[in-house]
Structure formats: C-alpha cells, structure tokens
Image (tube, rainbow, N blue to C red; front, side, top):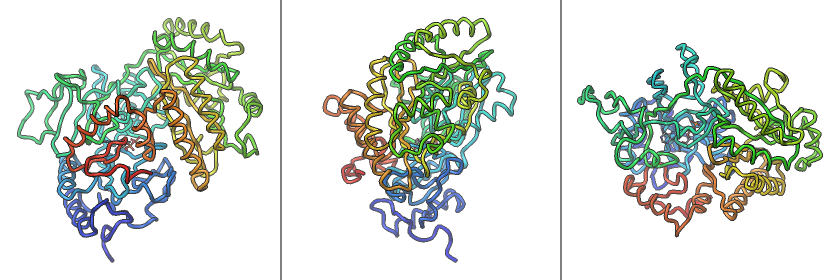
Length: 558
Ligand code: ADP
C-alpha cells in the first residue's frame, strides 16, 4: 500500500510540477513528521460540513464549486522553528502557503486558501497553549490554536474566572489569535479584539522572527543563546502596545505579511457585578430612533459593552428553522414578521446590552438606559431571569459576560443544508445611516429570494452591520444567487460610501477595489510592502485582494 501522502493532490499549487510537489512533501515531512502532513488527494477528504468538526482543507460554506477553494496539502508545524523551516522551504520551491489558526472562519472562507492548491498551514493543531495569564496585568499570551472556549476553560480550571473575563464572539470555537488578527469583534466592554491585543510574535516571509512593540526590546535576563522564540520577552510586552518607532502591528492584520505565532490579549477584570437585558423595539422604522438614542450613550460609555440591535429574523432563526414559521417560499412579508414577533414575544428589532459593576453603578446606568429607550413607543424591557423562556436572551446573557457558546450556530439552519456568507459594511452610528443600510440590504436580499437576517453591532463610534446571507449549499441556484447578491451589495454599498470590514475569499478582490481613494493609493502601498517583504509571493497570495508581483491577480478572479 502506498504511503498516505504519496501521489498528486486534487489541485497542485500554481506553477508547481508534480515532481516539485513531491519534493516539497518529502522535505516538509522531514521537518514536521508524517503525522503532521496531509495531502488532499480525493474528494472524500472534503465533504465536512459541521462547525463542530470543521474542514481544514476547503470552504465548507462554498459558494463556488465545493472543490474550488481547496488546499493541495495541510501541514501542521509543531513549534515556531518548524514554521520558520517551512517558510524557508516554501521560498526555495516557490510553493504558496496559507496559514490559519483553527480554520473556523465561517462565512468568510473557513480554512480554505484564496489560491487553490496552496499548502494550508494548520497553526493551531500543535501550537495551542495558553502560555501565560497574568492576573495583576490582566492579560494572556496565547498560541494560534487557543480557542475562546479553551481560554475560558483555562480561567475556570485555574480558578481565575472570578478575577478575569475574556471577550467572546458569537461562537466560541474559533481561535483568539486568528479572530483578533482578522479584526473580529465580541460583545463585552472588550469587544474590539484588535484594540485589546498587545504584542505579537511573527514569522516573516523570509523566515526571520519578530516581536512587535515592547517585544523588540530584549529582556536583559534572557539567555541569548536560545532560539529567539524561546527567549523570555520584555516584561512590558503585554503592557504597552506601541514600543518605539513606526507601529507595525496593524500590517499583520488581514494580512499576507507574516505568520503570527504568539499574541498578547488584554482580559477584563471581573467587574464585580453583571446584569444583561433585552429591550424589544416594536416597529421596523423604530430602528432610526433606537440608533439615535444609542449613539450618545455609547460614546459616553453609559452603554459599557458592544451591544447589538438584532433583526427579528435573526432571533427567530436561533429559535427555529424557516419551516417552523412559514410555508411560503417567498421572502417573509412585514405582516408575516409581525405574526412571528407576537408569537416569540419579540420586537421587530431587539436590543441586547449589559450593565457591569456593583449594584449602585448598574442601577444608575440602568435608569439612564431605560429612560432613554422609553422614548420609543411600545419598547419593553426585560432581564433574563424574568423571561427564562426567551432562549436568545439566555444565550446573550452568557456571551456578554465572555462565556463562550455554540448556540448561535442554530440560525444557519434557517434553510435546509444551511450555509452562510456575511456581508459586513461599516456604518456611522446615526439613524439615517443605519436605516439606509438596512433598506438597501433588505431590498436586495428579497430581490434575490432571501430573507433579510441582520444585526447591528455597535462599536465605540461605528456600527458593524452584519447581514447574514443564509443559503442552501446543496442548491446551485441558491449558491449563485447568494454570490450575485453579495456582489451587488458590495457595489451598492460603495456607491453610498460604505465599505466592508472583512470578507469571504471570493469577494476580497472586489472589496479591495472599492477602497480606491486617490488612484488606489492604499493598494499601491500594500503591494509595495508585500513585494518588499515577500518577493517570491509565497505567503497567502491574494489575501484581501493583495497580489504579489509574481501573480496576475486578474487571472485569479472568481
Ligand atoms: P478561526 O480562528 O476563527 O477559526 P482562522 O483560523 O480560519 O479563524 O483564521 C482566519 C484567517 O486569519 C485565516 O484565513 C488567515 O488569513 C488569518 N490567520 C489566522 N491565523 C493566522 C496566523 N497565525 N498567522 C497569519 N494569519 C492567520
């Protein structure tokens, strides 16, 4: 019987012969061992479709063909020196690499590479330790494979959860590091993950190792004969982000300029008390007034966390599939939605927030929040303990205090074989902007045969408006429609001056093309840096629309 990694993959890396690929595999096995290499040879190695057991080799929520965004092989380094050896090998043989941490990047492409046939670098399989939690400094230092659930469990198991909380996104299975460098968000006061990171350790495309910020200053007690990644870091690495000179951390986010192998993240001290709440907002048009109420409260931090205004159908989808509410195959009408709202005791919009601190602080803040929202006729106020039957509030109660869950997975099952794409434009926190984005997106969703399922996630001075385009992945027409819908939305948005904060592999070029102020000045800078740091273009080519000079980006259009 031939060894498991013998033979050609389904898709070879571009420009790589079968012979060179074999050489790469033999040599990479020498670096990491056979058990950490997987050549993707047949379609049976695709096919996974569960968030709980995610594919490491292709996009489970494919909108092109299932086998388009697929890796030739997946390699899992055991440590930083393996990463350095692999990237040097890639340079030598000009084999493109696509690093990912856990690969659960659902709605944005999962573990799949932008360029089919790239070698997936599974950073999380073996490098998954919480390296440090410092209680007084209130931070953690993590490796790529540490998931939000892992970090939370770590605090619980070490009796630290009464001291420190983490911040979690809707689902707890993704990596802290991957989510943060993709600039993902969560819902506690520490919801802007990138804002809360502090210090990176990065392997650059030439294999060298960098520590950013204060990490650039050596720890005088470190043994400099050790490999750089094993030397104890500067004591302020996780305390001060900026160090000295140009601040480089940002170029390693949504980036193809380095492989991040360690990251510091600030944790929130237990605030000494917590109360989540739901405010139901009855009418569609009330969104305008709600956002106007929210803006001054949020900028003044009376709203302490990242709260969300969820459209009725997002909550309805967590509580049941579409068939539970309607037999119609047309997008649900306002009248049908009113019936659903009544049945679920929810508003057309539902505002989930939380109060942090001991009772006197919470009471004072709650008085202001309640009085402010009471201006909306028919708004109702609930604490989770008052309505135990409302499952969404129970879930948000956990999420807004940094307890990870998997329950929000459910909304993907709105349709059979449910898959989803995120359309995620940024909006100003004004009633006019939120209303305009809602109207444009709802109208387009319905035009393409989909229900509008969306969420306004309120940051400090902006809204991440998240439109969840749910489609049946086994239905080619729905896949095409979903793809066409998001392409149309991106163009619509650009015409209004709205841009997306993050996107799926298939849309990266289009969105990068919309950020084209002053004759594409930003892209020119990005390309200059890319070609300087990665002259052979081996690291994540095409990521976020940035193509190295060795690639013809046009030829890779999807
Ligand atoms: P999650 O942790 O949510 O499962 P992924 O691991 O899929 O997310 O990471 C999302 C994206 O972030 C990847 O496709 C890749 O572009 C980037 N990324 C993740 N981890 C790293 C890393 N360690 N170094 C460089 N880029 C990374």
